[in-house]
Length: 307
Length: 298
Image 1: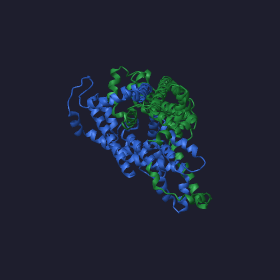
Image 2: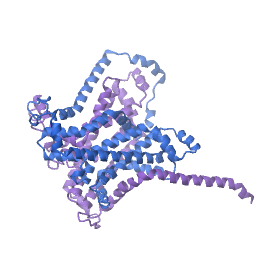
Image 3: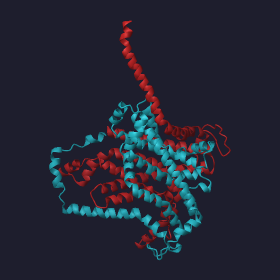
Image 4: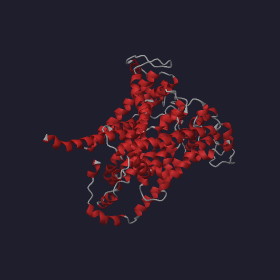
């Protein structure tokens, strides 16, 4: 019986601990629940349902018959899908590096002690908080091929055949890329500015004393220090580019022809315009995996470089 | 992170170097001038569309695309701003948008900060996995699951009502993420001493954490309000009845209906941007802080 007497204080302590754990679970979940309920029902359930739907022929009549891989077989031979994938990659391949370069450049410029910096920071961020509809209509007017002020200016400086911008099949995607960069650069500039502010100024002073040129200081001090920020910006920027939609929807609606048709828009078209919910889900699954795949590659490369 | 090891500053020299490096030289003056020039050009490029929008909204319709370009209106047509209210249901659209933006913002701030407290201050099994799940959904674009979500909302008879947009926007992972990042910067000792004083976790949340996190709440409110105000896709998919339309949806319809009324289209655009511009000017400090908080520890 002596053993139980010895053990009892530790047992009551274990008991207390267990009570604390239970209490923490209850209290913790009570904090999460209001948000988590909404999040689970409105986000997690649809994501799971997506995979089921992509194996069905759900359409306007609301009957979901299991059709196995038929949707995915159809994807492989679907020319519009192929064009949408190509255009999405086209947009991403140019928009990501361009926006990275411009926003980093602006951040470097603004990180110096100059007058007007605060004003410019506000100005550069403003396109990002402006609605896409207003932005699209004003750019479409300014870039109007015959009447717009931009082509008029190009004429004045001697370019006799300025581009047709959003009305030409070759120029429509570059136009979207330029407007997209103009809109988003302020946001990423802010992220870079926050990153730049974490670099201790002594490092730059020391490098300067050692005779490092501005370029060398940028390469050897600024860039290595910015690595976490650059990585974060690249990941977010890539996902945003892969899902690009509303800008295209209001500026070109995928046209002219299919020259700016992207994946998100193809989902919208097959789903909401043709009511082929099953097939649209299969396209969504493709977009889902493209995003996950590219993000995973980025994490992998980043980890290897950090080693 | 690990990058810090790459640079080994000769710390001894740094202290001496600082003053000499700050002496203005001819070269740095040229660099400074160049910096201002680039800044001025960039500022003009960024703001040009907005100036054009504003000036065109005050022109006669025929003068918007006059050749040669007139930047400044020949006559100022202030009555465009009276006229638009008769031609388009601007009042209804603005009212609808305001209702949605306020409702979403209140819900997002309440549920987001509440959940963030759980994620940041209470230890329980599965918490970190759950938080990872929240953050991971940021990598899944909404466009990839808008179809099943639409079917779900239709089954719940939420579509074509304000509730659809409120449900869509109010429970996002972003608010939880931003608030948690901020809570992490508040020292844990505050909680500990409050617990010893016998305060419940809910009391700590309401009496200590909420007042301390006002800057983060301001950031989250402003960002959520602006996002909801500007949302185009959500209303496009869910709001079919014209009496529910938001300003973005209404404006887009107006543009396709009166596609030759350039001056009035610009007037409508200015009106749709104006509330956001005012909010942004007043609260830009919080915008900047909010963005920086979410970015730093991505």
